[in-house]
Amino acid sequence: MPQLEPGSVQQTEAIHKALEIVIDPELGRSIVDIGLIYAIRSDIDGNVVVTMTTTAPGCPATSFLVEAVRNCVADLESIGTVEVNLTYDPPWTPERMAS
Image 1: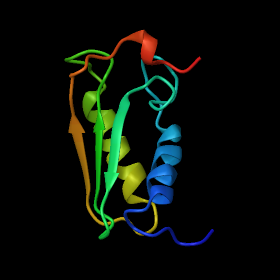
Image 2: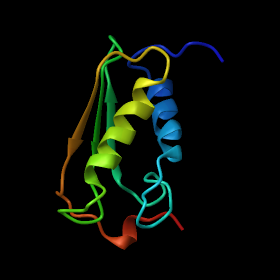
Image 3: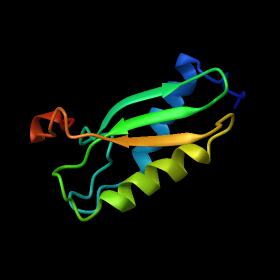
């Protein structure tokens, strides 16, 4: 696989695809499939910011999910720093789930 250029659309797509392996322990499905990933930004230095949510504020799996996202992205080629921002605006609803 060719190395992805930092900050490219292809790199962002690769990050999104890689996050499909992170499974929400409560629902047993990928955090991508259930709509927990709100945004992925990467810059030309390979620094990445992932904005995500959990199914509810105070979710007991929050720390696990944030760390899993950080580690998953950091393991990809051409990645600099990884920041995970947690937000509840807009709040997650089941309608965000892929069918």
